[in-house]
Length: 383
Image (cartoon, rainbow, N blue to C red; front, side, top):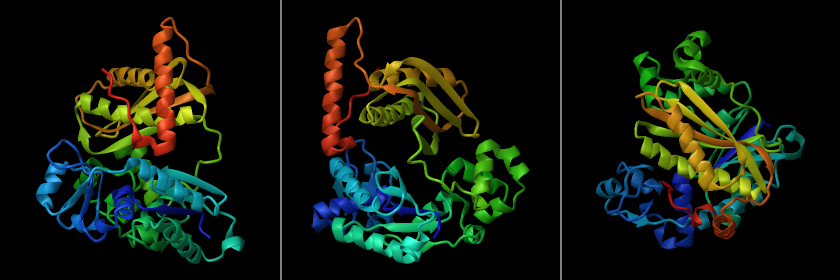
């Protein structure tokens, strides 16, 4: 059995699938999750029925409405998305010795050494999909391969409910004819640079000398070259002692507005701060990662008093970003991370009453998110 299996429903369809479970009248109809047109919202998810009209995740809802005015727009039930994600996880954790949740709707499972237990990987995948559908009513797709890259790419095949398996040793043959943009982590600017050099498929990348690819695209380019040659990460990280926690976002189009980047950082900080609080920890180091359109990467870090407070982490991260962002070049990735974990303790200051109120507020937010999901409540952006 191949080492890594990727179960995926993909958020652009997962949200729609959950909405259809909650409201069966939406089945078979064009559905867009992301609020009503007329506001400043964006499309969080869209059904297959809308895609033929050009609707895509991430576009403004106003534009989506112009492309597909007959679509049904729903605001989204974020607490329910977390609940259904947890239901899927409870099914999956019974099977592999190790599982890693990559997002609300994507899981990696390592079945290394389980050949005698489960036998044929295709039969196991069918069993998983059927159990999830029977118990949760969610469709999904499964990719099976020797590493995470292969499994992830495979999971995008045969949607919305299918299985793709690449046998060990067949990775390069499977990847070769696929468009270069199929590779995870490859953005629009990178693709344009590849096309300018006559590189259009993953096979074209694999045939390039590694030294040349690294000299042109740097360390990130070398990582993509290795993946194109079937050498993706074979292991998943759950089970290892957590040394740091981070969240990052690669943009579809490069961003040059610091204000827009800082707004995105606010969401990243909220996620990692919540995870640290859930683990009963505090961090003593805050770091950011900034990647420009030309793939040059800058990192900055700062030692801090033990904290898991969104406000303090965000303020520190933004300060690091502003010091790091020194070029008039678009940004393709921003990341925020925390490390140096210590056990949680009450945070005191000279302004005890203010801090007490904030601690109570954070605890209340933790309780709401624990019951209804992370997206159920958010703190406002601070200036």
